[in-house]
Amino acid sequence: MTKTTFLNYTTIDYLNEKDMEQALIRSQVQRIKHYPKLKELGLLRCVIVKVWNKEGMFRLGHMFEYKDEESFKKCQPIWQELSQKHTQKTPAKMFSNRGIVVDDIDVASYKG
Image (cartoon, rainbow, N blue to C red; front, top):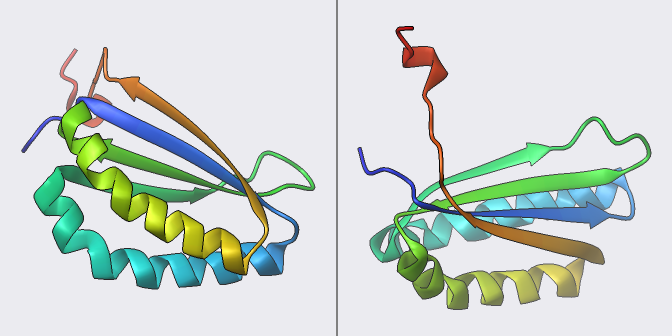
């Protein structure tokens, strides 16, 4: 299994739950079409979560794991295209954070 070295975590805030749910369905359909190319470019994993501990907020969190920073850069044109289509259909605020993995412990497999 290839180890993740570079992460991107993006949160997207929507005006209401209906917008969030519709955007989630649309984005899932679009991403599936692009996964083969993204995989080829170095995307290792994509996780989407509904943020539940922010009352009155309608927020999705997207975590993308890449082989390295170069893989991240290669995938950006695809993500930019999808993001532009996404925000044209549904008003939303996006916030991205990027980082290099400095510690990675698989607690489920921990034998300590």
